[in-house]
Image (tube, rainbow, N blue to C red; front, side, top):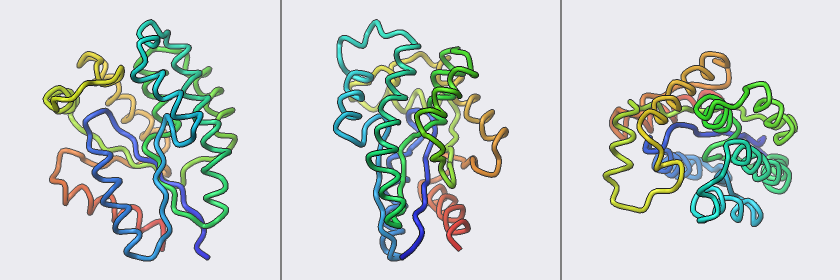
Length: 209
């Protein structure tokens, strides 16, 4: 049985995570790997309820940054213990659509909450379960913001943030990648879809050999 592997995808809204996750999943499964994709917040019954509250519920309109931080952490704590750890123990390749770095960037850096507190809450939520590899799909913040607002669909709370917020998010990801270069790697999401996928595959396949 292959050893389990935990990969997280990060990046601002509009960077193309969903597309690249789907492409990677198909390629991994073609190579014989058992793959499960999970999203944050969400991935469990409890987590999906938290996701709705965070992103779409009218009650969330007045949500404070501190409440937002703790709700994300609650969803993550449940996901790690209910899904991620058992899957890794079974040898599954687990792909996460966001994980702890989103909280560091969005609630810590972009929202301005104390990073020491954010890191402590993240530490409690994950309980030592860190991704083997994190890929940040990096895109110019103005282009990401424009892509989201031209989609024609209803935007959630995060997607509705001003362009200045998107810029803080982008810089935040660049900062965390610089601080943890062994785990977190940057990929240019402004390249063609095929080029981005090949960059993703190169980094993943290198870790699996």
